[in-house]
Amino acid sequence: MSLFEYAPAPESRSIVDIAPSYGLFIDGEFGEAKDTFKTINPADEEVLTEVALAAPEDVDRAVAAARRAFESWSALPGSERAKYLFRIARILQERSRELAVLESLDNGKPIKESRDVDLPLVAAHFFYYAGWADKLKYAGLGPDPRPLGVAGQVIPWNFPLLMLAWKIAPALATGNTVVLKPAETTPLSALFFADVCRQADLPPGVVNIVTGAGDTGRYLVEHPDVNKVAFTGSTEVGRQIARSVAGTGKKLTLELGGKAANIVFDDAPIDQAVEGIVNGIFFNQGHVCCAGSRLLVQESIAEELLTSLKRRMATLRVGDPLDKNTDIGAINSRAQLDRITELSEIGATEGAERWSPECSLPDRGFWFAPTIFTGVTQAHRIAREEIFGPVLSVLTFRTPAEAVEKANNTPYGLSAGIWTEKGSRILAVADKLRAGVVWANTFNKFDPTSPFGGYKESGYGREGGRHGLEAYLA
Ligand code: NAP
Ligand code: MG
Figure 1 (cartoon, rainbow, N blue to C red):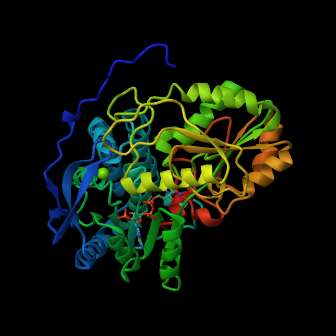
Figure 2: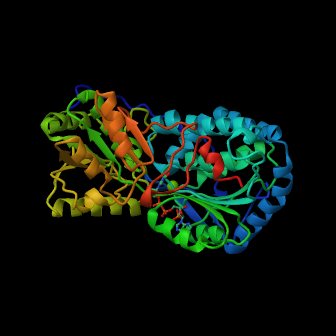
Figure 3: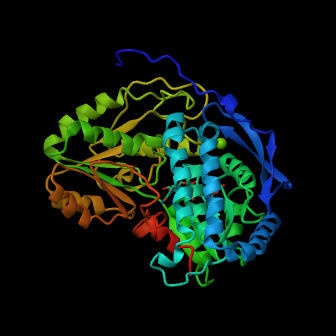
């Protein structure tokens, strides 16, 4: 349908130098492990490199290194810790093009997102928490808040470097030391971050990176010498972690899944709302915990809105993540593609109507066309379960009260969106939504100064902002 074709505009991958193999980053050094695993580029299934698989004894060494480093790191004046964080933030900015290309290669996300969203936010988080390091007394957490000790942090694959920043920046600013496990399919940016730490002369042991699979993560969070557990991932794994941490005295924050309602009222500016819907569900292939995956549209404008939405979806470009014109990149893994495919088939079987624009998908790699389901009811699995892919479920409502009821009818409560011209309606509806973040006439806006976190099965604790300090202080 597009009126003109875009010429390819690939970002050069020569800016990033990926070594044939990577070890574990423990006590300031890269060292080998007994076993390894491969990480691939999901856009073409090529192996990018081989990465060490941390065994329990490796995690033990990493936790021990973090424990030793804690003594001197926590004793440093905040203003000294801040210097390291500022230095890391500046190096991240200097290396942002390299890191953006790396992130797109390992994760499959479009370069325009890794370049314009992930990397700027990563640096912003380090700058922001660097600013807090010498002002902790004024954070409203008592006159002399103390760090907890060693933080064991486990992150998912959808925003590998950004989730690392959300975890590591506040931990270091508050005087804690860290052992972090990145996701199995996206370990590379964390390993490059280890190199950034070395470049910044961060004392050995303050940050340790242990790559591996779920077992490595489980061993880390269950480690008796870890004082604080920070986890971002699925609700299922979050539940297991909550159980294993219960009664140990470890402090725990959980950032889990979501099934956000994006609510469009009849007085909303349609074109803007369409952009917000597209951003809400197709940004990062829909691999976003706070994705607006349930569109609630007021019945009287449903037809008009869906016509506009479909027209807009037909212009989305799916393909090479390194092409600067790409809107939707590759699905992160075959396993995730299978899950999206399965839930979408269930949606059709349950009676919802499926629609995707015509789009040709590359032959190799993992791809899924942007998809919407109409005629969805609240009982449908595609309205209840997190799909974590570029799939939107559309429901309608007649009154604001019905919109609120449907929006809250979910086990999750991470985010929500409201589209209306009336400020009073924004306030009234936002007040009734059981969601950690509510966006009004926008969606997926992130800022290090703003706390982020869930209600109900979306987890507990807040990351970002002044609230994000609390998770790392006693
Ligand atoms: P996941 O399976 O829960 O994995 C998350 C991380 O935990 C990965 O590093 C994983 O390792 C590790 N892990 C797996 N089993 C573990 C265990 N028993 N103990 C400790 N760690 C374990 O989640 P995912 O499917 O990769 O990520 C998608 C989910 O994350 C979605 O539900 C999404 O909503 C959620 N998410 C939430 C937020 C938020 O801020 N609320 C942000 C982003 C994503 P492997 O990679 O090796 O399996
Ligand atoms: Mg990968």
